[in-house]
Length: 333
Image 1 (cartoon, rainbow, N blue to C red):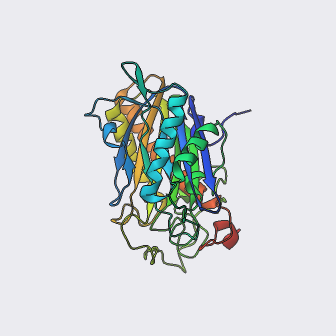
Image 2 (image 1 turned 120 degrees about the horizontal axis):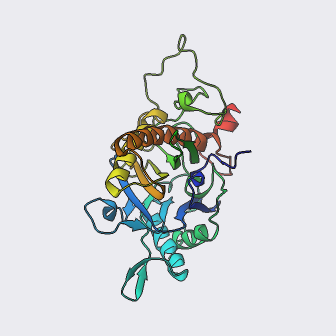
Image 3 (image 1 turned 120 degrees about the vertical axis):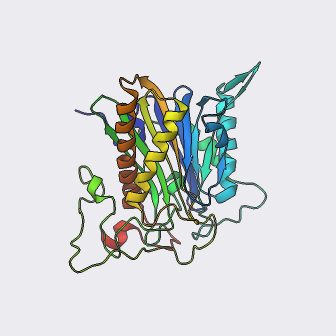
């Protein structure tokens, strides 16, 4: 019997933690490698919000990270990275600088401030505490849907959510994705329950509906958030991970290819009003046998698992008081 969960944590050496506040309608998700992991990033949206993203450029010195953070809260959510950093420092983790250890914690945020939640938190930003809590809950098995960074996420037509998916390659490596879907566009085709990611679905993981007949419907007009046309209001942020040993430059290419999963599962994607971003990390448990062919296979898989993760996040979203949009289940389930 397989012990695979169809989650990011199918990559050996990773755990994921979620923390959220239902009144806030927002939350934080953290990916924790057991040991510092090599990582990079690709940003293709026009309105990103990040912390420590520049150091993931292959030109720069720091090779490994201690955690990756996805958070709601727009720029306020960047404080989640500080909370994660403080919790990891308490655990004795971090990049050694003399006698001091500095946890390296890149983070990305999405805009969920106008989703109906209570954002009147006063003088104390709640995201630092949510970041600490996410670290403490980190485990191999974790929930998807309206949890963590996906708690208050929305798309053009439905609630968004936190999604994940994994795939094992012929060479034995695993490639997996984790994503918080808060897109300007839509994950479903027009007014139907069918997902754009349908060609990549496995084991009916988001309903098993396949693609609709196109005889009586047209899907060439995109659906967008008509009330979300402002910078920073729409973002899909994700992580793609593998146990295949990769350099920062190779991981940056993996992140670029994973963005194809955005384009296959969301329409439109990578707009001037989205902050679309993908982190890529490697736990380096498995050596490459052929750098070129292994990299191409991993990149293709990264796009596939990202598209599946996006659909799974929307499909798994749950209703909550004060929601401004229906869930997939409440509308079509």
